[in-house]
Length: 126
Image (cartoon, rainbow, N blue to C red; front, side):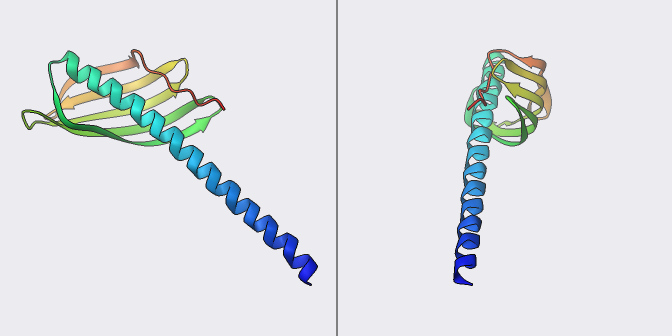
């Protein structure tokens, strides 16, 4: 019985370790995507003359599909004059670019609506 139990326990431990590694990898990729979107939002705000006091902080809900990430993200921040800043993204990020819908809003007024994010890429190849 002990000889059968040991391989089963070792297999279960291996599966748990792989799951933990996969979750860490996915979190790292989501962090990279959030950073790329935060940079894009900051550039759009800067181009509109808006300076941030805090943020933008983006949360992502993305799924990896080969070498690209698809899904959505929401970002929030505060301008130095106290106005509320938010951005919404729904699309695809990859090493060849970021496409989809990016809306950037200051106090709920749209200051940018993009279908293609300039100078944006996320490398998800390993």
